Image 1 (tube, rainbow, N blue to C red):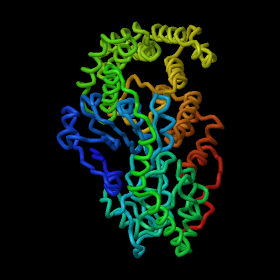
Image 2: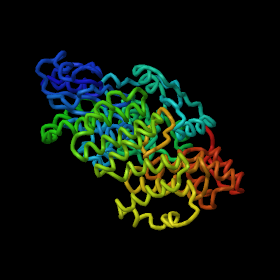
Image 3: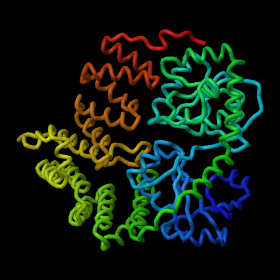
Image 4: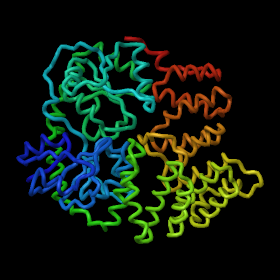
Length: 528
């Protein structure tokens, strides 16, 4: 087959299987068909590996060839994948959790784990490092920073970032232990890269798919907060035994997890699945516009093309024009053009799409200290969606009281978003402060920032647990304990979460603040 492709993971494997693979350097403002034909006049398949800030051609929905999306780091990109993937005929994701998450957006995806090229494999090398971790630190990945800080109190941890692939694999091969950590349970790329290097991989328990392919104690070793020091001590004490395990892991990776293995699985899946049904042009335009909007919010840029597409849809069918008006309202609200935002939200409601624009109008009224109209928006939502009223009945007492606070209204908004399934977009780090967020956790955090309370903290934790990021709430919990706001249950929960995030120093500080003495692994395990 002639396969036009943008990406790296499957390229080697497809070529090993005898296919012609032609690179596709996409450009945003050029015609998609012309771009493809400029590199191959008769392609059989278009394969795009999608991750991070990708280039999306302005008329991608007009592509006339079969398209395949292979999504990398899919859980942290679902905020735009939930629209973008509607434009593809076939969808594959690298993480198991995304198969379920994307289903609720009407997308059928298949799990295709990551892989490594043959250049990732290394012969045995002299071990220069006890423990190596290759990866970056960031403000929103607190667990990784806590873990590295904790281990550095006991061992020399070789932490590097920003190195080439070849140098990374050499560092792995020269290490007795390769440490793996992930923001959420996942079978991430570092698992395969570590195994391929021939050194021992030490990865987290409950690894979101790791156990589907590798056996703990045979191919790799797993750790938890309560045993990590004990495990590392044992590995360093009896390295030869564990090196045999590392070699077994490398052989398993070579046998079943190369680029060729994944390319075979991809093509077998394509042969067994019918192509997605063609979408109407207006529907496809909306998905493209929403993709562009979401990516601008996350990665920066202007909304010009998204706005043009959305305006074209305003005169179309009821539902599509309503959705288009809603997204236009979000764009204008984000640009502080509130009058235009209100106009678009009102238009969306008139076309029969009510709950989401009513929530945005409620927040706009709140920002302008108009609680009366904000409450009126809530009442209209409950008329439109009686099932929401049944679920949050106990919270509606606020509405009937003469004195209702802004915080109470924000919490009702937050709980409505939760019921609608808009809990939080993991990885969606917006470029600017969003005055009118559309996820439950973001609205709850805005309520907390205005007035911290036990009720708000409980709901923030509830949302974070649903998204497997409860540890990201530790700064709020620490603030609550420090300021005497936290309940006894929240104090205990803060200690538990701190330990699960390897934040043992914070746990100690919490204990000192509350007089609760708890023993951590750092207290009881011997150092290396």
